[in-house]
Amino acid sequence: MSQFHPLTVSKVKHETRDAVCVTFDVPPALKETFAFRQGQYLTLRATIDGDDVRRSYSICSAVQDDQLRVAIKRTPGGQFSSWANDSLQPGAQLDVMPPSGNFNVPLDAASARHYLAFAAGSGITPILSIVKTTLLAEPGSRFTIVYGNRASSSVLFRDELTDLKDQYMDRLRLVYVMSREQQDIELFNGRITEDKCTQFLRQWIDIKAIDVAFICGPEDMMHGVSRALQAAGLAKEQIRIELFAASAPTRERTPRAVAASARQHTEVTVIMDGSAASFTMDRDTESLLDAGLRAGIDMRYSCKGGVCSTCRCKVLDGEVEMDVNYALEDYEVARGFVLSCQSFPVTDKVVVDFDIAE
Image (cartoon, rainbow, N blue to C red; front, side):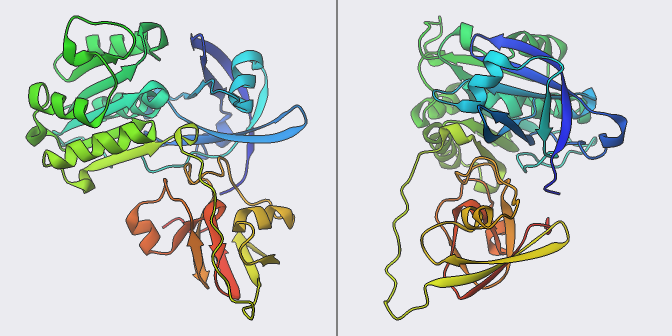
């Protein structure tokens, strides 16, 4: 499950001045491996200036498209995103991990639901996949999208979104909110905040008609929109959130107070791809992931920020403390799943399994 596969880049399209859409050629032998659900992401690996660099990017194609595309927006100081925008060309080969992620809901052709999406910037990437897939798979369902950007020039997939709106005139409502470009309707000016969302719910969106809401963008925006939706009556279980690593705040770990007499080391066993490997690590100086990588185990990871869930595993024995979690649902944590990049052992022995999916 953690294996990378070499895929050839078949197309690189510049969507805006600081974002590219990358299409991969998936050979017939890997079609099943790279089958995806709407809203999922790919973890890419490349050697850039001698560094092994891994990043996760959302798939922007519909399940029905028979095409594997991701969007890569340049981030300040982003080693992978800058390289992809400046240097990546068709014919290049990248190591790609199979699709992952749970930013979606099961679809049913018999359903007639009203979906709502709030997106900002590159947060439209998984939303595009979700919208296209859903409108095709559920002929009785409809979608409302509120998409925030600085200005028209920074809107990702503008032509594609316009085509979708024309194709589904009675089933898709789309509005742009601009923070640095004045629009005629005041509601559509500014940033997407908790207050702005509340205004939309009062003037433009009937929350009672919404079955599921998707939110993707900067952390503050997502939490604000989620609060506004819940205050208006939408249950937390009806809200799906996806945070990008570039939007996650950096937090310094505060070491726990450990008694001088307490044992300072933990024996860790990692089960992955059907094999087990063990190592010893200091109790409170590095994460399970960093210690495992230092021990020579090729544990899967991408963002190392608790965002993408690529390093998700299940604790079978022992106990860990997870510092940050932007990726796992409450029910997953309750079942013992953790993010190894954010997990620090608190017992003498810890066993984690990367092969268990549910």
